[in-house]
Length: 369
Image 1 (cartoon, one colour):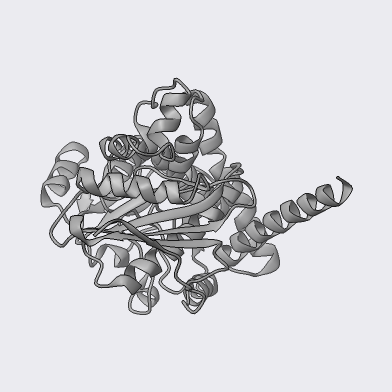
Image 2 (tube, rainbow, N blue to C red):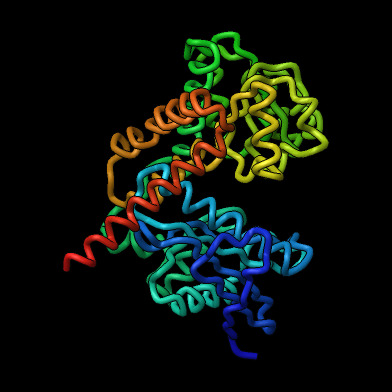
């Protein structure tokens, strides 16, 4: 069977947010099935990574993921003042696989060509730079090709380094807001996950003298962290309930839910994970009512995308843009206090205000032309 494309009507879906395009691409002969969602292109072509995941239970679960993630990329790019819109791709990998085959990546490349440049993608969960070099054999719409065209080289550390520094800046901003000081010495911080982002984050926190408790599903990583930093450890299920000052979720999303929210002792939640709130409105308000300062995920974890889209810029420039995440969060925390609205609601309002202002300016320009 040849590669097939369709544009399903997903306006019925609870996570549909006036997405501009949703493309479904599949070729059962090679085990390829993907959803690509372009949420908004007001500020420019959509940018967002491609996730490869073999654990989706069905199409609806994958569709939910791509809709939420693509919306998050619009919000992330907008709040980071980047000249791009938001999009995302998810590949439903065959059961038991960890990474895509070359045939699957070439099929993705053809799907990107179908969208004719409105969306460009790159590395995410389950995908690597080498995968996109393969996709780049058939499409221009992957980041590896942008890097080649610019004659640039990827900065050392890549997206995980800048994501970690953005989260670090966000933790300091939240601490300043909550306690009047950025000093993290002896501040008790629980970090869930010890991947590339969280490991760098932990290094920064240890250097500041924070009192760390960490966990990961990989026992080897946990043992190494204990050996290197002499930190406390917990279990993935229990770390959210530790008696700490700050909880930093840096693994998969959905930690803040009906089963966990009433048992959280931390006064600050600031981490790299996407989609931390299972129900954005309900749980965002519950955190606000409980006096917990929550750094909206798409704001605090934007360092990676800042690095990804600013192709050819220096480390110093990208780091400056990344560290500005702290200033953005201070504005959100202050406005949350003044308007008595939860931080996610405030951040969402700021995004919509910027999008509406941009659309008004575009409309005015068109009328004057």
